[in-house]
Length: 161
Image 1: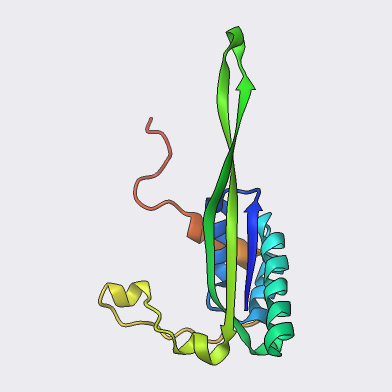
Image 2: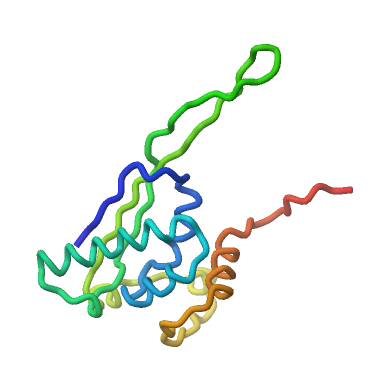
């Protein structure tokens, strides 16, 4: 119940912002989340997720509603090296990054039984019980989740005046 996408022409760092949002979710919830997300990678990941669902249905006879996203991995692919002409006959290098994306699906009971460490448990605090996520997600909520994941930790990038 796996699906692979090799040499997707977008940087892995940008693709991971989208894939981190669907880890551990049921397939219907993940599809709704990908529909509402205003990122370029969401279309390709949705297509890959549907391919993994089709593989599960064809090979194992498992329905879409009983599947969850067990693992999503984004690895770096090859880097295409190009150059940009500059003044006085010089050239600046340009790197065009690619990604390899792997999605693995599992039955809901398998995914729920896997131990999952949250940030709260790592700090020694009580872990909060999250309520069941609703399948309807607005674009504002999806964009806020992406911004929260992409927010740099530590020092701000603003120059000091």
